[in-house]
Image (tube, rainbow, N blue to C red; front, side, top):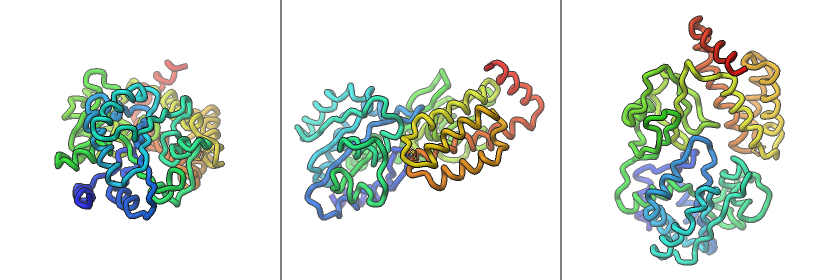
Length: 352
Ligand code: SF4
């Protein structure tokens, strides 16, 4: 098993839930805890719009996935395994349970349904622990981190589905530094692809034959919290949970898109901390009053700074990312061109 940890470290495996935390460090921490009671939690919440790779893995690689669960469980000597799934993935529980039995995990897994209408926050790892314990649907103060004090106060290894799938590949010496990419909004070739994690956004779009023949921009790492980039900024890697959503530059409706992002975070804020509860609400209010000109308001940048700097959890800190990067990388460059400005005005008018 020590050998496994070395292998995970050597391939520099990172978590694929979005935070890209080194798997080696998390596993080592849980392993080194003295407690005899440890838990394994598999996160299949997959709550960010635009990401559906976990569903793809369950549908296409369930044996490998459950093989990874067995490896992780044996590694920490888990007392119990909680397999946390959103409603659509929960339908696969019987299939996964059959495979679990066949890999030696009979009776060791509790399949746990993510509460319906619990929102985005119910996919955050410390919130999942609260939900399993029957507590409020809100994140926990860290430290202590779940690896030291997680479920029922015991050391807990919590990884998402893709991460556990990759652990299986590492254990079998089949890992090739690949990751899953969810590609959206290009009707022809949209879907999930398993490609090198070192590809740039541009390379991923070209390799999957998704590189648009129209003017476009992208959002990477999730349709809600992902950064927005223009087509001259595609030489970086796809980070976060590995999605690329393509938008048609000339056909998109700026107001509609901004409203979607702002409303998403307001509606999914759990309300626990003031910067996020008030900040996401006030951003929506500001948008209603000023529309696209909200970006010129001083309160706009103050609210975004507050969200970044003082939100309690990652939902609040990621709330301004899409809006700010859209203004900076897409909208502002676009309005310098009179021709494009006409197109934008037309789109705003069409929406009304
Ligand atoms: S940042 Fe938002 S979602 Fe997170 S604890 Fe605060 S109010 Fe809740």
